[in-house]
Image (cartoon, rainbow, N blue to C red):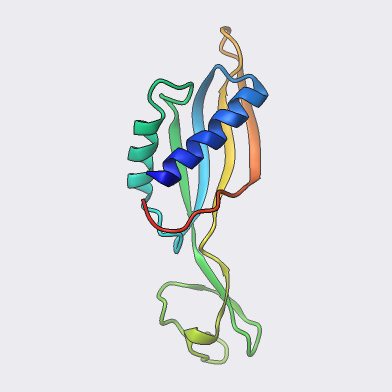
Length: 135
């Protein structure tokens, strides 16, 4: 619930800053290791957004795969399992550098700016809520 509340605060701040009267869509990228369950985040966001300009917003969540870099040979590869070995040199996962898979990035917010239904989309790629734990 705290992640959904923090996300709503960011969405509300950006909505005010860009004059959105209604938020239609929020796009997120969430790493596979971020400990965020997309369905739970969607449910919680719907609950905390009631009565706000984001009450009807749809969350579009893209899962970012876990990518590691082998410290021995430098190979970058997508991990499907935490016990995957480096496909180039066979190093075990304990020595891997995690390149992606833990992030949660707000990519964009889309909504209306006035009563005429004009749509405005803002990219918010730099927004990275600082959270740990799960929804």
